Length: 248
Ligand SMILES: [Fe+2]
Ligand SMILES: [Fe+2]
Image 1 (cartoon, helix red, strand yellow):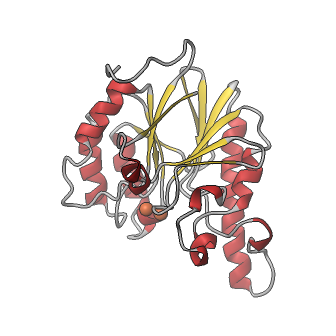
Image 2 (cartoon, helix red, strand yellow):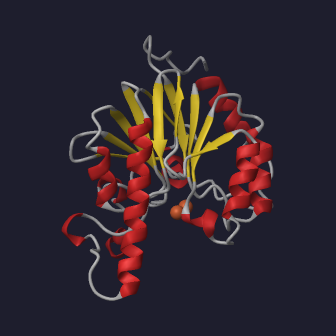
């Protein structure tokens, strides 16, 4: 533990989280120090998508090199940028080889009796403004893809038998952490189905997401579960450490 960081309460797990790393081919070593600091201060690291800038295997390789500096378990979800080059399987493979557990198909991970479930999530809008499956086939296909992501989240959280769980996403489950983003793009930043799913599970203690670079750090689901936007630019504006840190 860093001398500046109080120890977690007995029995609690200290979670570090950061999203939107947007690693490029030229950002070698950009995260090495941060991952070393995480290893000194936390029990587990969550990476909330947009790990690479264009989803290129070469970018994933740069991040993989830096991940060797992380000695605590790394649990990650992908972001929209990680899909951009059509090489998402290669990106996943490279990061998995570097030790990251990628949540992308209903998987879940337990670390020190705390469960971690999640997936990328999807856009689609919020509340009464959420896009529904109506009209032209292209809209129905899109909405179904959003619902499929929600089902992945549900499957993942359902796998966990832990008393305490954390949901890991890239897209936002609520509008509370989007404050500061232009209203016009809220529907592209997340969707309410994610929060509805999370709120059906009594053991979820916290939610982390990224994607909303101009949003705010803290919000909560309708049921009151804390939601942390850990997009790197959001954390940078806080002026504190370059990753979020909380106890579960
Ligand atoms: Fe991003
Ligand atoms: Fe994103």
